[in-house]
Image (cartoon, rainbow over all chains, first blue to last red; front, side):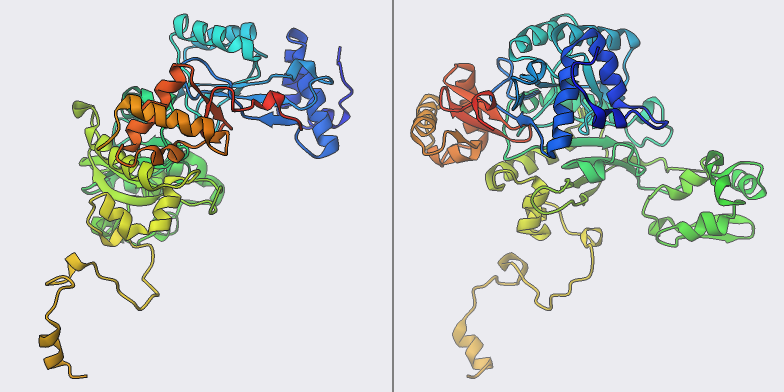
Length: 424
Length: 79
């Protein structure tokens, strides 16, 4: 039986799509505090202001992340959500769960919280929505001892790393994203659970440039699979796509009309490095940017090369201080491997962290610090030689600045000798 | 020369107790000992949370540190 009249919320049940309001009403039959979620949201819709108070000192002993405090500003009207803290669980790599574990975590959450979940938060965690302060420690005890499951990151911590399906399901994965994600999650437990940084820091691992976890847009440290050698071409399969025997893009391209390799593949190559010659598809691989478009369209005919690894990009973020920005390519190619516990990644991460912890301002993402000091300075910190791929666009500033080390003799000179040649 | 971990903890607590703001960013404690690396200061501050002398205050996106009793929880804050 509804506890509150919610005509505005009820509107969100109309239409053919799933409704979180219907989900809340169903859960409220089991857990009546969910009526107060609906009641408070109805009031927010009427008042056009949130009635949540966000943040606080709640948490579990020894951890400085994983719990986000949330309270109602109208606890008398909505006692069921007077406390409504959020709990973030560290999802398994690629979000591969067994149904048994999902049932266990749902049972645990109905025991200690509202039963409402968010699958998943934008960082990647499984999010458990709504519990009281006194339930946090018992929940954490059961979670860690019975389910052997841990909290994720929040606040100024390393956030829960996430990865694409990787080699588990995808033939295009150029390195083992799941192994990288799991290894670095275990290696950086202290940074996930205890705040160390000026602001949040996110790792994301994508196996190829399709970037299924959107690491280039959403993470401070994106590791994106790529290859150094040539795209593998099977010319017989190329001909089957051209003849229509094979459906381009797995058939999805049919909705755009008959397949035309010149229009749909060659014409969409961002660097124009492909052409047809005597019935064969040719690629100038030196000009290829490894964008994956041609491979996506003709997966039976084209495959990534065999000399595989990853590109490291840094500094993406959503708009907080300085607008949204995509990641900047920092290191064009590394070979991340479990054979050395991903030490090639760890070395880069720690160099960036040491610098950002010292020079980053409070609430400044590393991408903002990079932007503030400029890419040349950041590359010097990272001990990376600039290459043309670091240049976003040709400079429009006519001044060229040199460091003393870049000039023969530095800034020291014999002024008398100079004036003999350049009279005043 | 950098302070010992116990000297550093004392300096951090002094700042947390007597600073004008009840909640401080980790970076605000760097001035307690310019010779200590940020990671050492983080370690000291986190140990003090475990010892019950300091608490974390988190908005969800950012985390700050406060001397126990100085930070107010959102529950007690008015709207």
